Length: 170
Image 1 (cartoon, helix red, strand yellow):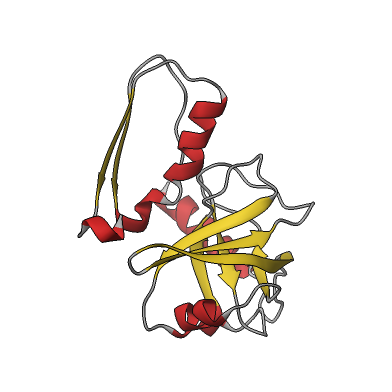
Image 2 (cartoon, rainbow, N blue to C red; image 1 turned 180 degrees about the vertical axis):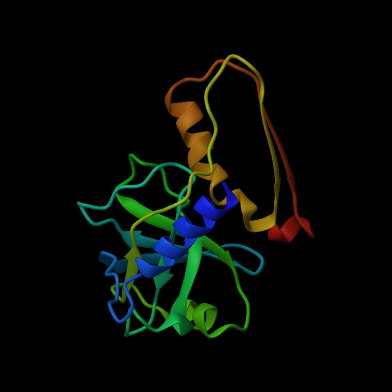
């Protein structure tokens, strides 16, 4: 069995695409507004492309640089908007990174790009209690989940335990 597994691993290594770049679809966005939502926390609201689809709890790579391949101005961020909204919302803590500095410099109408949404952080609805234990900016993917529970008029018990370093950062 181990020799068969080793053979499969060797075959898999030979199936790579050396020298060929695998293209990911890139979506163009335009900044609608930037809001300070708490101490050291900013919300960016962008246009949502008509052909952009995501599931609640997913994340994407937001690039605010001039070159979509430049990772200096790109970060993975949870999508904080609900599926029914015609916008894409992201929230983040402010830091001294080049990416965050660029985000703070953005003006309404400035362009950015994102990749297709990925990840599968979510929950299944049931008649049992739903408990969220969240800290800091980790609330971002939870916001659309709570919006969905409200939208479907969820009747089960929902508990949200949320902590932050200070009340001003909440």
